[in-house]
Structures are given as C-alpha cells and as structure tokens.
Image (cartoon, rainbow, N blue to C red):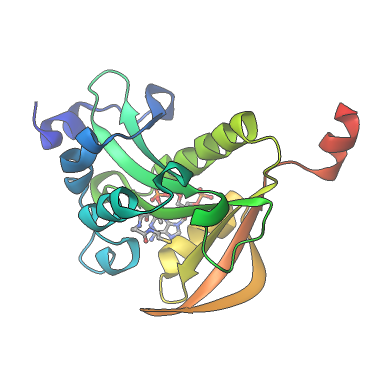
Length: 185
Ligand SMILES: CC(C)(COP(=O)(O)OP(=O)(O)OC[C@H]1O[C@@H](n2cnc3c(N)ncnc32)[C@H](O)[C@@H]1OP(=O)(O)O)[C@@H](O)C(=O)NCCC(=O)NCCS
C-alpha cells in the first residue's frame, strides 16, 4: 500500500494511533511525510535526521519515533528525543529534548502533534525516571508550531538560542508536578 493510500485509509481518531520506536528501515516512509512548502525549513529533512543519528558518536542517546496508524500502518508523524550528551547546549541536565517533529500536512490540525508529544512524554516518564521535562527550540518565525506548543502546555523558558536559521525560542514541558513527586514518597 502506498503512503498516500495509507493516509486516506487512516482514520483520524487519535485512539487508532500509536507511537513506536523508528528504525533505519522507516527512513523512506518518514521521508514521505509531506510538509507545507514554508514548513520544511523548520523541521529538517528526514535524510538529514537519520544521517545525523547514524554518524553520531552517541547514537544510542537519540531516540527516533514514528506515529503510525494501528490498522493501516500509515506513518503520519515523526520526532526524535535526545538525552544526555546528545542534547544541545541550551538543554537542562534533567531534560530530554525534542527534535525534528513533523506531522504530515494532510493531517495537521487534528491533534496528532499533541498526541505525539504526549506519547513521547509518557515514554520519557516510564523509561527515564530522572527526567523532569521535555525541552525544545522553536524558530521565532514558526508561529504555527509556537502556538501549538504553548497550547499543549509548553512554557517559554525565556532562553533564546541563535541557530543557523535564526532566533530559536527555548520551551519546556514539565513531566511531573512537585505535588505528584511528593505524593509518591
Ligand atoms: C507544529 C506541528 C507539529 C503541529 O502538529 P499538528 O498535528 O498540526 O498539531 P495539533 O493538531 O495537535 O495541535 C495544533 C494546535 O495549534 C493550534 N493552531 C493554531 N493555528 C494553527 C494552524 N494554522 N494550523 C494548525 N493548528 C493551529 C490548534 O488549534 C491546536 O491547538 P489545540 O491542540 O489546543 O486544539 C505541525 O504543524 C508541523 O508538522 N509543522 C511543520 C514542521 C514544524 O514546524 N515542526 C516543528 C519544529 S520545532
């Protein structure tokens, strides 16, 4: 089944989606995730992301994920979590960082980006007990992504990073509230 066929057949209901670890075999299907012409600049190409992971000296600290439909196996979104030494200089030690998030333009605005981040947060909580927040850098010109992140619960850290394509705003998403930590003792 082609990717487009899969997308057409993929029900929009979020409950039919799952986040799973991506493998190098997913590269061509991640490449097929289409973005708007004005969006590609902000997310990087799939090939550049897979190449960077493969050539990294600590590739085990990069965790690529796809969001796919249970039934059709259509891949509708992609992101990478990084930890420890693979994180950028602006990241806090108690964080994992989010990179290269993209949702196919055909299904943007239907809650899939939010699902991807929430599922990634669940993965971080269950597998990395010491991690307290997700952090990411969003280009100041990427208003659509900035609005989405803030609506999902990310907060502006006030940090700015000057990246290769301009000013990046550093956002953070807390994974555990102090109240929850106290109640677990
Ligand atoms: C940013 C991105 C991942 C969001 O994914 P998405 O599946 O469209 O997001 P969702 O549907 O889960 O949420 C979008 C939110 O932004 C809001 N929004 C505001 N303007 C919007 C717009 N023009 N289009 C879509 N959503 C918009 C929606 O109301 C929604 O808020 P809500 O969750 O409170 O209802 C997606 O647009 C994308 O892939 N962009 C291109 C790549 C990119 O810029 N990646 C980010 C790199 S930092």
